Image (tube, rainbow over all chains, first blue to last red; front, side, top):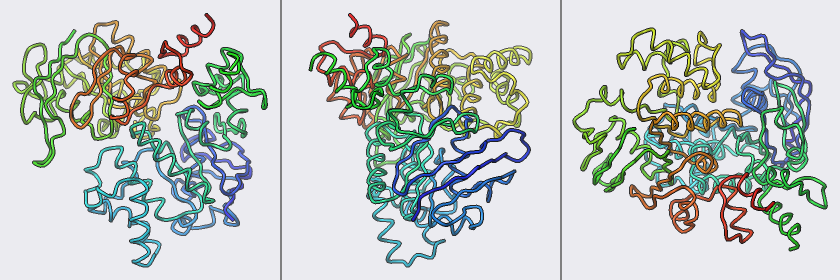
Amino acid sequence: MAGIIIEHLKYKYPGTDRLALNDISLSIEEGEFVGIIGRNESGKSSLCQAVAGLIPSFYKGAYGGKVLIGDLEVKKVPVDELCETVGIVFQNPFNQVTGAKATVYEEIAFGLENMGIPKDEMISRIDGAMELLDISRYRDRYPFDLSGGQMQRMAIAGVIAMQPRVIILDEPTSQLDPQGRDEVFQAVQNLCSQGITIILVEHNMEKIAQYSNRVILLDDGRLIDFDSPQRIFSRGDLDQYGVEAPVYTQICKRLGHKMEDTGCYPVTLEEAKTVLRQRKGG
Amino acid sequence: MAIIELKDLHFSYTAEEEVINGMNFIIDDRSTAIIGQNGAGKTTFAKLLKGLLKPTKGEILLNGRSTKDMTVAMLAKKVGMVFQNPNDQIFKYQVLDEVMFGPLQIGMDKAAARRNAEEALESVALSGLETTNPYDLGLSVRKLVAVASILAMDTEIILFDEPTIAQDYAGKERLKEIVRKLRSQGKTVITITHDMNFVADVFERTIVFASGKKIADDDTKSVFLKKDILERAYLEQPDVMKISTELGWQESFLTIDEFVGAIKR
């Protein structure tokens, strides 16, 4: 089982006085697709790094509380073992490339080599991940010769190939064109439907609303809310947390049009279309 | 106001593939967004304009003068470019030094450089971080440091490559304000972006690139109404336009204000 339980998590980066994560407790079911939103510096990336174990293994500082993935307590498991359970795609793909490998293929293989995966299985996993992210044609390219978008796909492929039970994506498609972005989100949603838990940080609220089962709202390191996208984006105080609702929600809020079944505002294009058609008398 | 003219512009990194394949257009005083699929040639165009790459054929004229006849240092006084990845741009240990570096390099005196740097930091809401090491800042703030570094140079042309990446609501609103302000100051503002809502909100003109060619060039609303072009370039309409289109409205809208206003009419 790879559900996630976070209990009273507190964290301060070395040399700082402020709690980057301030007493966060929540639980995520296995196979859930969870979005994390909040203004910059609200704790989104820190929370991701704490679930991935990089806090406190790599980023030192003051740490309290615990993060459990299934029955593993992340701070007690070495990162090289933890990466078989949880994978993270960094916000800036340039930071994810090892710099030690000459080709895209070798770069994707890097994590698998470290895990000691047999060669035949490695080949099959790498080919599958490259196909899923549509980067097979770049297999022999030097990683740093890729564009930002291509590099972002390579970084995601490298994590997917490791087949972790939890995948954390920190603004994974920021450098992709809109259609490429949708392809990646579809691929991630497919992984989620196979039972992999997905945690996504994203400033594109339309995508958060479209794909997430539940949304974590953070501010100043604190957990403000953890609920369905409809309930989160219907809150009247989002401005206070530096968050803008999806365009569709903003339109319906301005018109005062809520969904009849939930009493919330629409958050996706489909929901907004339904509500606006009803209000126009079909 | 600077006039940029592309004349049969070609560029290739390798002998096999042209990344810019015979482009002709003029960038005038309208704020201009360049959009297109990954690999369409957008960033390559930016580097050609900045003089970091040289055309393999054709030329770019800047106020009538070919950039081929200008050094990178000469172009630096005319064209400021905010890189997609701020780590490609930032190297000083203090934010203020970083933001003053560009102005000093193009020959501004120290007092003017400092004044411009402080004003630029204020416009991106980073006053107070002058002595911070840029590498202690998160990606979003580091990107704003990169923006301030270019604003401080006070160039005629400012080119933003994917400025909204990693920006939250406040950061995006700040960038929109900066674009409007630069435009009102008579600067030539160009952005390369995949953020269609950002384009819809502040850019007057939009040019679509696909496979190294210009395939559309018009006022922003007209471009986003060309669904076949958008599909060809792997793009999509801004979210407000998507909903008005899907609801079958004859009229189309770029902003929430326009759409809500029309519904209430």
